[in-house]
Amino acid sequence: MSFTTRPLSGLLGLEISGLDLAGPPDDATFARVKSLFEANSVVVFRDQRITPEQHIAFSRRFGELEIHVQ
Image (cartoon, rainbow, N blue to C red):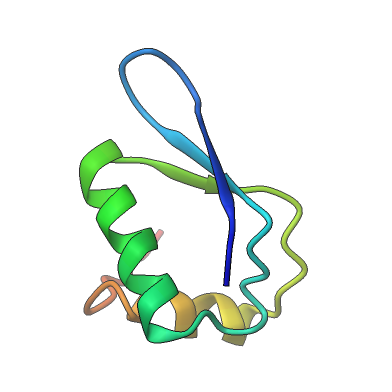
């Protein structure tokens, strides 16, 4: 899967466009996304139309989730 990136600011963050997280991304694409996250500390995926379950499944690929109780 191909996608494009754009810096959010000069210091921190990256916007990723053209990637549909409902897919979900294949292993090679996810490895690239994870590498970009590690290098930029923040990544933004705008206009995603995913279910809560898809969001959780994608997030779990980064590691164990921490549940915060309010």
